[in-house]
Length: 313
Image (spheres, rainbow, N blue to C red):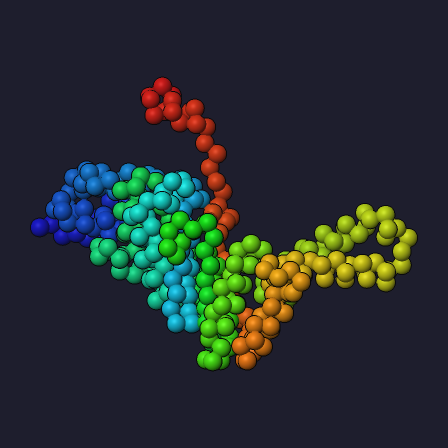
């Protein structure tokens, strides 16, 4: 059998666009013949999968996995929401979330972990999904959350167990005697987060550049406000403080009005749950993933696509 060198694998990778492991396997199957290896990849659908890999994948699912006082969330993207209902796709998302829990949300480690289907790595399995389903598929991100108490989850727009369009994890600190109460208020808060989309747990957690940008916008708004015309600087400063305070109430989780009891803030609702349980409870962190956040979605010319498929373009 011909020696399968790294240079040979690299050459096939450059010609086919297919992953290194699949290129190595193709060369092994064809005794190191590059052209035969390309045909082997095409026959397996992997060459076609590589060509799909530059398409925008902005649909798919968010999946969560929970352990004891820990949780992980991943986003597995596809090109269309139709694929989110594919059982093979869903099974992969569920398995990938469990691996993310084990790897504590480190995406590089998740992609390099053994594939749940037993063949190569997770990245290799993603490539096979592309080939079998016929769309670009990307394991885009993963994150991990742990708490000295409980981690609760909520899935919005659920498509299957533990996955949907939005996934939220919430960490709640509390004693062992309050574990049930921590899990309950955590689940309710996760539902709140799905709806309200806060950007930080506390005001101190808001990135400095985000605060500066908001302050600059509010300063310009005040300059255009007829009520501010001719007012002394100290009055302008008070107006700015009031508007910044309102901004905090809108984006800081603990300051937001609790969706299940708008007369209370989230912080007050958690405090009340702790008092009822006889032990203090405290939110320690949260994660919120929504499908396609930050991904530029395609805007296809449907007529052109049909023409191309029929050979008229």
